Image (spheres, helix red, strand yellow):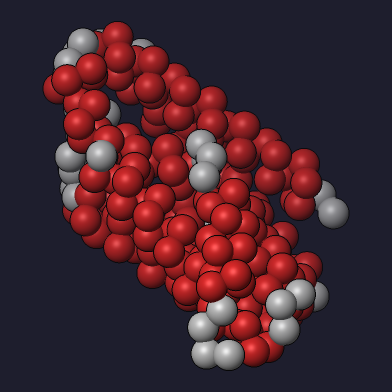
Amino acid sequence: MFFNPSVYLSALMLSAGQIIGIGPQNAFVIKQGLGRSHVMPIVLICIVCDVLLMSAGVFGMGSLIGGLPLFVKTVTWLGAAFMFWLGYKAFRAALTPSGLALGDSVERDRKAVIRTILAVTLLNPYVWLDTVVLIGSLSSAYGPGSQLSFILGSVTASITWFVAIGFCAGKLAPLFEKPTSWRVLDLVIGCVMLLTGFLLLRNFGFQ
């Protein structure tokens, strides 16, 4: 069957469960969305990366990635170092009252934004494990004839989520006119980044 609605809906829900959650990638998208800074390229990069990684997983690359421990470990250490750096920047912004009301802790440089979203996406082993390995493994249960339906469902979940948090976050901007709001957001993001870095090293860096 060219398109299987049942597989499509199953993939949509399964993928949504993997995508939704406050991790480094989502935290960065939400923060930039609140600041209305380069939201379009951020959302597009997130979606394109998901499409490529999910497709790779569905078409069999998951087992290959799982069999390359050196690759996983290298990405883990690079990713953890970058998460710690982003955590430091978030805490530093939270401790700097000046400019918080204007959202100065939001990244405004387009090239820096692109580098950061690529890094929090591709240097995070959880992204590879969730999209390539896990999604790829789950799709195999539906058989090779359902690959297209599964990918379409997964991509739909990705597009819906990133468009929602990227472009709808700006509507909450009035709530962040006070410095305290930005301070709290930066503290939360800093904790998320540091926790992700520690978990990466604990789960994958020392194996």
